[in-house]
Each structure stands twice: as C-alpha cells, then as structure tokens.
Length: 167
Image (cartoon, rainbow, N blue to C red; front, side, top):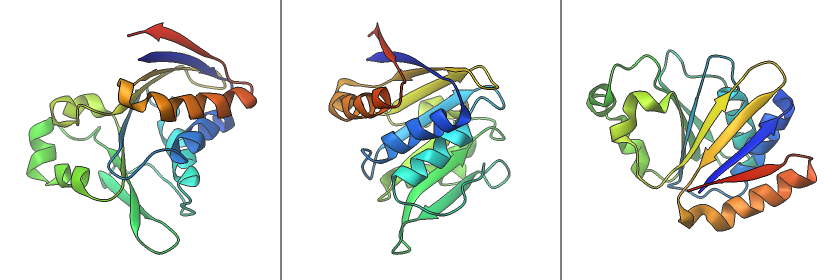
C-alpha cells in the first residue's frame, strides 16, 4: 500500500509518529528517509512518546543507534541513523542487524544506505520538504493495513488527510 499526506508543522509530524507508536508492536521496523531537516527525528520523538517512552529523543548521528527504555527500564525503541555507514556490510559487521531480533521497534533513519539488510516486512516513510510543510509518503505491506487504518483515523481527527496512491 502507498499513502501520501501533508504535515503542516513539526508538531503534526510528531503526532503522526505518536499515533504510529501506539499501534506498532515489538519486532516491527519503520524506515525514515528524506533530506536533512525533513523531520525524521521529529517523527521518531513522536513514535517514542506513543510507545510510552519519556526519554529525550535525539538523532544518533554519531552513535549510529540509540536505545530508549520503557517505564520499567526495558529497551523498546532502537533508533538508528545509518547516514555515516557506507553499506549494509558495515551494518552487519557492527552486529546491528541483531536489533531486528530484539523485543522492540526499530526506527531507521537514512535506511537506503542499508537497503539490502532491511526486513522485507516494514513500514517505510519518505519525507520531503522542510520548514512547516512536509510531504510524507508511507509505504507498507498489506499486513500493516489494520494498524495503519487506526493511525489514519486518529490523524484525520487532527486534520491530516491521506491519499491512497496505489500499490
């Protein structure tokens, strides 16, 4: 499935992340691609909030991955920034693929760098624009349609509109 929407503010981008954080399950993977400043980390801040994580979310540009714990201290969100990696080989060599098997959600910024290492079943966001208005394209396999319908319903209450752009 392919959906497209417009976010009119950083806060709206965070709310979209929050809505997704409420429905994603351990083992799910979401990829975030777009230009610098497009809103990838803003989305992840909302994702963490939706998952009940209260830690300050920052881009793991230099650490490659940040782990965020739930209220019980259990790591639930693994936030990657693969911008500084050269290829999937770097990802595998660092053992980062092992996060896919942990009991948490993986959110991966700059995922195209490691495209061939990514799980096939994932939600992919492509964010373009900066400033207040961003176009967000969301790609997901059919298995995610029920949870994405919940996200869509929640966000439409916030004024966000979605267009189904086909398979």
